[in-house]
Image (cartoon, rainbow over the protein chains, first blue to last red):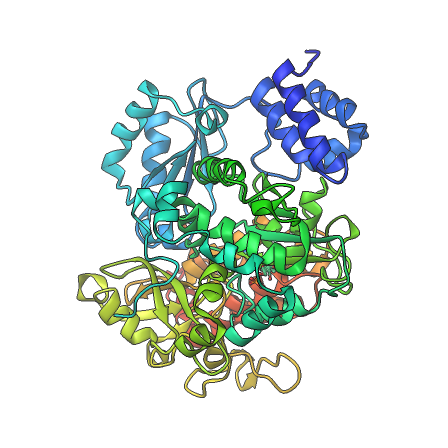
Length: 166
Length: 441
Ligand SMILES: Cc1cc2nc3c(=O)[nH]c(=O)nc-3n(C[C@H](O)[C@H](O)[C@H](O)COP(=O)(O)O)c2cc1C
Ligand code: SF4
Ligand code: FES
């Protein structure tokens, strides 16, 4: 899948190259843009980033694989991040996660067209535990019986991560 | 009730906009600061006794003082990577009061003669990123950010840099590597960032809450801030209370308040009228308190030295020594206070904490990479009730081998809570082993 950045991404990257002290420093923003544009970071996407920033493909690949939000495989439209860290665990997060698993018929880390289910570490919403994040939407104090309506809501009003942000 | 300083307008959507923030007196401190001598701003912050809210409690004015007044290429970095389990204040500060943070960054940049500011915001905080970008745009249009800040010859460029999912990037040198477009692996210190920081330039890294306090210190003076605090720690601080209390939330409190007062009064007590079993005082990396240790004020020095807190032991009778004769008790850390009631399986909580640090280890140091894996394996089998005799001591031995032997403090962050949980709740661990169904044949 040969990948080329769109005109607007190229403009944005050039603008960032002007502002950052080195070209390499534009790598994380470029990887975010590539993921937004190409869906996930397949080899051709990484190659496009490397070429644009004059970096080696090995360096780009090394960085891309370090960060958990950068994906090497396609995701569902909604990436559901269910926190199970301690504050959420103490208030029932594992029951919430299990409800998502059975409602979506996905295990953590798996995707279908519409959803990717992620067992997430603390998402800084601990005093509203258990907490779930999807794009720019937070769900607070989630109980297992709310899971069906959360899923239905996201089916009707999807929250793709990158679109929700702009 | 103390009047909050930086959380006073949380929940008020008007405060998020340029107009609303200015109506509350916003950006007056920046105007005032631009008329002050740079060294006088640093002096005010020294007087204020403000200590870093990112976890270590390092005095902010002293940190700024490490930057030479002659340096011309200083960089200011705001750490908005908040991800220590139990901590949820920076995200709220950005979401509700983005201009307060920007104003704090701009005043600090002026004081340090920094022409570049990076706000490193955690990748998962997409809602907050959107809000912050909007605010930066407003501040640029208003002339607070740019080549001639408010018509002066002060030049400040502010870049919001998104992380991409890695807890370790909250560690300041990993964060700098991440800005440079590298893997977020911590650097060996020294050199410290003030000497060789991002892009080899002198760099100051401060937490979001730390910087949000700056406009108020400039408005009311360092002495005012110092007077609100304790002898060596100025101001109020935000605590994030979670777990088994009736009213979890973020509260900006005086540091003379004790854990018991916070839990019983501010948070309306433990849920279901239960008893307290354990309290994590400052994010998941900090050794827990037991129910006999809650009358200690929530303050940096008190938690490290108060005789009412048991020193964390590695083996029975041997206190864990931080060096220089300092016994590790616990620390106020990031302000994340996690309350556990008497029904809590603390072994499972400890195991979940270990798994987190194992997952987030960057893998550079063998003791951390391998040690957290071993801890995780032993912790999991203990939590499942499948522990073997000797496992508790095994956990201590591994944890002791990690602590102090790694490049960054993530190793300690994994080891300390393990040692703390074992010191305070050894019986719970032993019971998990002893109460297993015995195989008869
Ligand atoms: C593993 C690890 C994770 C950290 N995560 C954060 C974080 O998410 N946010 C933060 O402000 N500081 C974090 N810190 C502390 C920073 O390294 C640094 O001390 C702090 O940002 C300095 O700001 P302050 O002086 O204003 O506290 C972390 C430290 C370690 C060792
Ligand atoms: S202590 Fe752990 S996280 Fe820190 S540098 Fe070493 S391996 Fe990486
Ligand atoms: S522990 Fe779940 S949001 Fe912090």
